[in-house]
Length: 73
Image 1 (cartoon, rainbow, N blue to C red):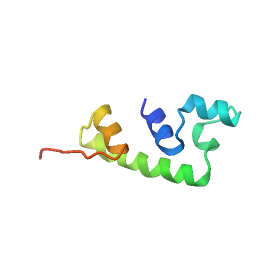
Image 2 (cartoon, rainbow, N blue to C red; image 1 turned 30 degrees about the vertical axis):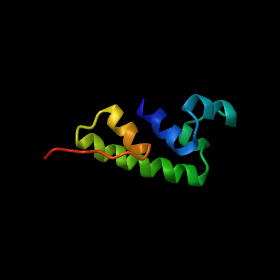
Image 3 (cartoon, rainbow, N blue to C red; image 1 turned 90 degrees about the vertical axis):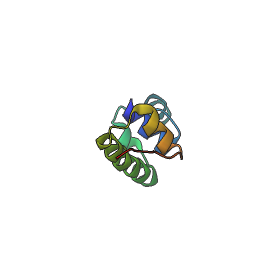
């Protein structure tokens, strides 16, 4: 699920849609442009940090879509 969220964030398409559009049977990161891959990797780093803070899928999705994450310490 997170891979699909990251793909959609970077390319505007789900993993399945990206593979259909670009007509290849490869990993989604291999189908991305340099700019899309950079966006994907930046978002991936955010997701890793958020998972270490025990964020759930909805919180991660909200943050990647421009929201904020509040964490109690």
